Image (cartoon, rainbow over the protein chains, first blue to last red):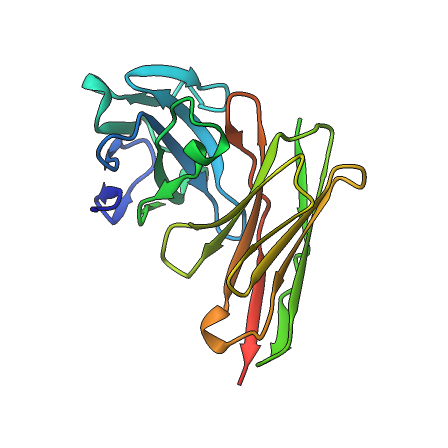
Length: 118
Length: 111
């Protein structure tokens, strides 16, 4: 079974520029998550999708971050304009996310995209 | 909001010994709690899930306990090996099956 795919793996941009990250979850996984992981910290949830609907985006800085999951499969996360404090690893994760109990919510992570804003 | 505490100091342990990590949480009552392993430059990997009505869960050399009264989970690696060296993340659930991750606790197994 293929894992969660993310691209690019690394990105360096200047502040005020825009950037987009792409994620392809495990086939059949209904729930998709985007996390931000700053060096030395645990992952922080930015947005959670169930199929193509947003479940939670309360921690997404909506003035500069946006995300979409068209057709309920792959997803993109965009930052525009980027700030220095956005330098972090952006992780995408997916889970089965059905009514099968907590086991359905084990999360499978991609390798992440390391963003450096200069 | 949820507060998750894991020991910020790295745990250095001799090969063959048992490593024990602590996760404390405050301000809420998770329905379940997950533990993940993260290696440098990689995404976290799921290890174990324990539900609020379970006291203990085991998987091979791993054991997790969950004390909802103390609001604490302990994570044990028995007969530790150098390949167990990594950062271990505690993640109690909240709300709509979301996870709140701790900062992680680094384990270094010395041969």
